[in-house]
Length: 104
Image (cartoon, rainbow, N blue to C red; front, side, top):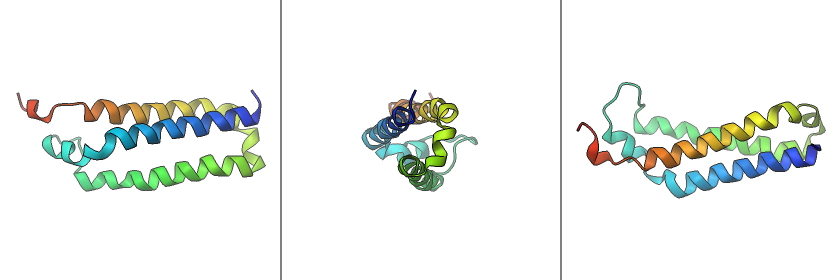
């Protein structure tokens, strides 16, 4: 694939992930508070995602302007797209959980 196609794939995957997060991600903090599990971080810990999303956005924009990315896109794009789609699907699946069933 050409570099422009790979760049567009990365941008599309990021866009889908942000769409999923925007549609389903509003209740993550409240939902995580409903679960009492040692592996689940406290609600404020989810604030790290703002930093993660910002750097993902920086990458998506920078790849269009920094020609050095062209050399690694053929290796990187598949993994970036998979990670974006998994990230977006996690939010959808997690927020579809019914907190009223917790502890039952």
